Structure formats: structure tokens, C-alpha cells
Length: 274
Image 1 (cartoon, rainbow, N blue to C red):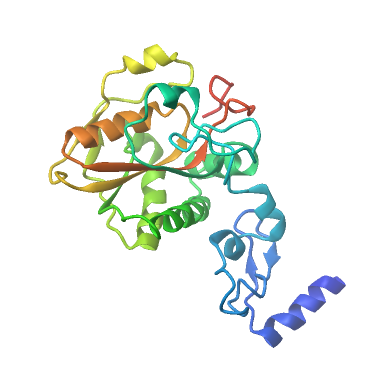
Image 2: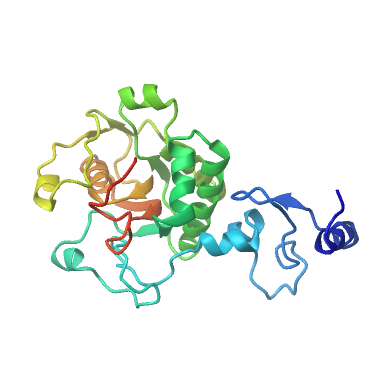
């Protein structure tokens, strides 16, 4: 099959400039990272991020990182993605148990589909790609803040783990751990009760949920980063964070690949196939 002019040019430039052609982690189309992503720019320019190295330009635009327009305490998105960081009504009344909340983007579009492919389709490459996006957010944050000592994934109940065969949060946490050079401890938090679908519960019902987690030993005086795939209502992360704090942890930070939005078709209370 005859190559297009763009493909012929790419074939010529790759060996000439020393760039490596790779496949986009999302659409699987071949692409060459930009010259800046290959480390061939002025040293004063910013280093390439995970998105530039993993995704073609078209897919990068479909997996945007949310940098504004959300609550700085819980990540609840505002209606406008460029709005200033403003506490939401819930956090003005009562702050969540974690210190910092980190996430990549809104649970919609290709980010949602990638999470579903990893979580329910068993796609480890998708989870690796998502883990790298989250790791980049975490690395940026901890470049100016004390790093945690442990990374703890939100656990699955044993029955759900047998059914699924893997814990998507653990797979994400492993990528974050490699990036931050921190140990991932899946033994420090266990789920002792099966999860309850919380998107259909009212805030008062969520507050009355029995603590589904139990903490291990060796947590006194430690700082922990808690990792999950999606933050919907924040109830699961809140339960996990409180369990760790009660076990002696001095600071919990929470991180998730995606945050649901009340302004999205897949926000809290919307029909979900998860």
C-alpha cells in the first residue's frame, strides 16, 4: 500500500532526527513525539509530560488535564473549566478528611472509556497509560510538597477481587509508586465489607454507611497517598482516609484518575454501566 506524503515524511525524519516512532496509547495509531518530547529543545523549556510521550496530538486533546474550575479540597468540578479554584458548598461546611486531592481529568469522554476498558475490560495497557497520567499530576504536586511515605490503593473486597481478577487501583498505584520512587502497600488497608453503589444514595445515607475498611499496623506517624480510579461522591475515599487516620496516619492525600461532575452526563446520579 502506498504511503501518504505525511507518512513518507515521517519515515524520513525518524532516523534523520533520531526520533522514535511509537503507537498512541489510546488510538494505537503510529506517531512521532514532538521534537521537544524527544528532549531536543533548549534546556530552559519544560520537560515533556506523560501525555506528550504516550499520546498523539489528537488523543491528547481528548484526554485533557483539568487545571482550573474545581474545588481545591475535593475536586468537585465547576460548570466552567476555566473558572478559578473555588471551594464547593459541601467543603465550605465540612472539609474532607484528606489534606490534598489530586486528579487528572473529568470522568467523561475518552477518559471514561479508557477507565472502563481498564477496569472492566482488563486492559492493563490502558491502566498503565492512565497511571502515568495520574503519576504526572502527583509528581508535579510533590515537587513542591513533602512526599508521602507509602502509597495505598483503595482495596477491593475479596469477593470482588476473585470476580475481577485484579484491583485496578493497585495497578494505578504501582505506576505512581514507580514514578515517585515510593513503596506501594496494599496490605495496609483491607475492605472488610463489600462495596455499596453510592451514586444512588443521598448524602445522609452515605454518612450512615458502616466503615467498610480496616487498617493494618505500622501506620503511626506516617504520611500516606491514597489512590483510586474514580472519585464519584468522595464517600469511599473519605471512609478509607478516616480509617487510616484512626490508625495513626498523620496526613492522607487522595488521588484519582478522574472526578465525576454534576455538570456531566456521567455525574452523580446519572445512569452508569459500571
